[in-house]
Length: 102
Image 1 (tube, rainbow, N blue to C red):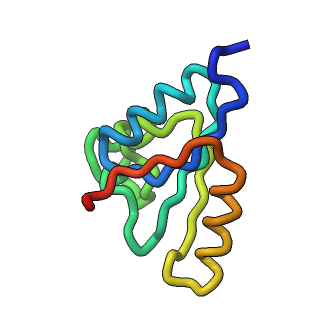
Image 2: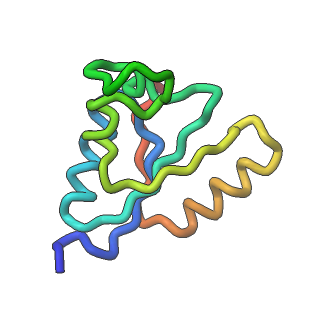
């Protein structure tokens, strides 16, 4: 058993510091669900090094490294039901993380 097994994280982080931090928690056994919107995708998705020549948003080595082991959930935050969905995730989570500017 890993030390953080059973800890549930709802992850709204992006770029480097937030995803890296929650990634460390996942390495120690936490379960993380990463929320992302197609309207504002994670900027790390386009950061080199990039694998292959395709147009897939899942080619970045940085993105893959910082988000390894996490579940992903795409959500249109402008949709009327988005708040209800987020509230259900918050009720599930032990920890909610975000690193947006105030």
